[in-house]
Image 1 (cartoon, rainbow, N blue to C red):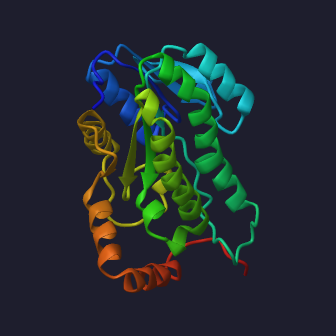
Image 2 (image 1 turned 90 degrees about the vertical axis):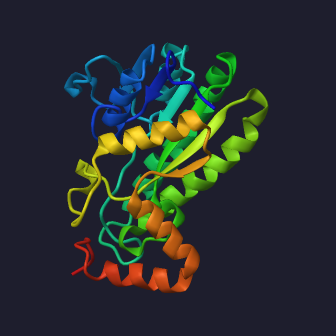
Length: 247
């Protein structure tokens, strides 16, 4: 279990959305220091946190962050990218590569850079902010789903590799959240602050995988009960979702 009171945390993509809510919640729980990673620090307003320059797809910036944030014992891999286009039949064949670069390779780069930092600081914790699309193949967000699925496996592998140094790894599985990334999504969306509170409760309880909201819980349960039927349902949603496709 990870005690967040008094911790030193770094949250990637910490200047807005779920990342900003996690920063605020960490501070509310008594974190000693919170670094908020942002690609454009000059445009980031995160009271109470130290904003650091961090594009997780840039190895030089990741290395610089690991050197500067040498006191971190909680790493929250939150930064993500959704291209909002189809995966196979798409006008933008490079979109899936960009999603993979941010959602998987960027998270992997951060994990590799900060693993020794966490080890020197007693083990600490890594929190990977994922999506229900990581554990259920969501055809209407094909590239995003694939990249998050890769990070779902990364979480388990990281947990195994860093077990000897005592690093806890928690995967947060999110449903639909009211953020800029989900602005195109219709229907009920969760408040990022509720997601942050539920997710950090799970971290403090030492939970390995945690569905943060009702949509995530229900989707995972429905897929487990009837994988083929649920995947057909998600496939039908592809055709009523406003995704970029040729023509």
